[in-house]
Length: 143
Image (cartoon, rainbow, N blue to C red):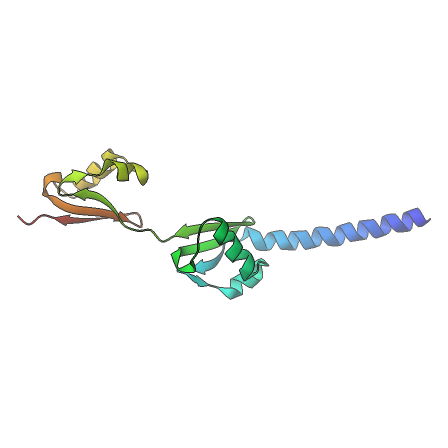
């Protein structure tokens, strides 16, 4: 008889725990943007059941020392996904392409030349070009 009472207690405990985990998992599967442009959304942070200290520790593990470095951070599937603000990178200077930078941003020369062609620009007429936030900016030489 004690065995059945014990078994009933265990089943009730497991059922409560399963419900708790279900609720917990549900809150993590939504896209929760907790940091936007370096500012913490404490309302969303509370819903995720993470503390600010937890988030700061996760950021430090990824080498981020300042919240202002973050474009956005979200919690998805129990993981912190971070997008940092990008710094501009030089692609063309005085008509010369920086192929190493193209490689660093995972773009090809063909990609660059297709953009120049679509804008009807000659490489020799470009003084400076930089890339930031998935966009190219071009400064042409004076004619």
